[in-house]
Length: 464
Image 1 (cartoon, rainbow, N blue to C red):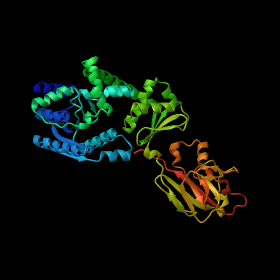
Image 2 (image 1 turned 60 degrees about the vertical axis):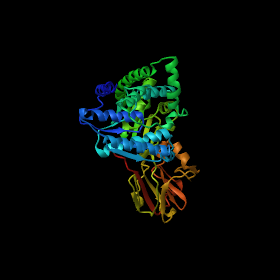
Image 3 (image 1 turned 45 degrees about the vertical axis):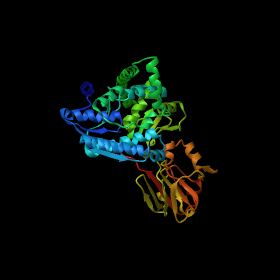
Image 4 (image 1 turned 120 degrees about the horizontal axis):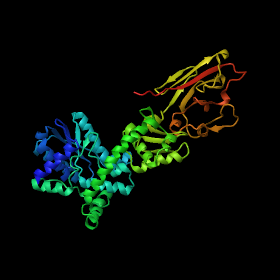
């Protein structure tokens, strides 16, 4: 049984090109039977494959003493095999609380961030995880119940980036029989027995019921289905990548625009795939099907609507485009600075300039980034700051006051740009909504004796 299992392991890794001679592989080990068997098999054949192994364990500190016992077990097991083991731990609950994400999502993020950081630090090639055929079947069902698309029904990918999953060919029962045949010890995670978790409920309740009453080979069936969808997904990704090049414009690494009219020319199914492709290709993020649908709902919504895709990826609908933005692009720069008339102020994002000029130097034009004000109507210093809710001014050419927030709405300023808008204030009055509109009270007239030229120029973000 042991020899047969190892032969199947080698055939699977060769067929899927998971391991090459000379590979340096980090084996992710939790202490459970799957990861213990994975490390054992790789250790058995490492000389034949000419590979180098180290192990990595992440202690999530979710089960108190039990988590620490898992860590100690992994350390001993790796030591007995003569394999170097790297361990890291973190309070997962606190991490998830601070990021406002689920325990499952946060645990996965912490774990894989650790593995990838270790891989880069050690100069290794791949990270091997111990997902098996049962895990894949559970994932397919879970995604189906969630209402997933093609990618979700493709299940767990055999390889993704630096991550490989060499045990996907084997069922949990086969892995346990291998462990028994070799006399391997392993840990049992008590949380895996709680049916309050959806995945556990599928594993412990739904799949056994299907196996007993409908299809005894349900694990194999779901894995075969996942393989079909995986091949379909790969084909779609290839075709969709061509569409993305046609309808998407990358303005900079943090901003991508998608032409709404061009996107609407495609079937809804293709639209979904385009959104997924953009998120993965340009921002290296993964989102679930529900979030993809929320983006597509923006197509028929009014300009100004937006959705948050991830913690720092945001999608906004303007009049003609879906605008994908990473936080650095739409995060506002906090500005509050005192400036004397005649002075210049500069940051990485803008330049503000002011200087006294004679009347014959005044040149009125449509450039709203340059204005002229009556210097006798201002105080000894300005405050250049972010606009705030409740701010108001009298727009040039008007008699009544208007809230800055309403003014920005009237101009159809995109939501991701509003945070960047600054105002110039003097003695408690707004002199200028910078680069947009002067306050009528400070305009120059025939009786103006002292003129101050003010300029505000945003800096263009360049791609690196």
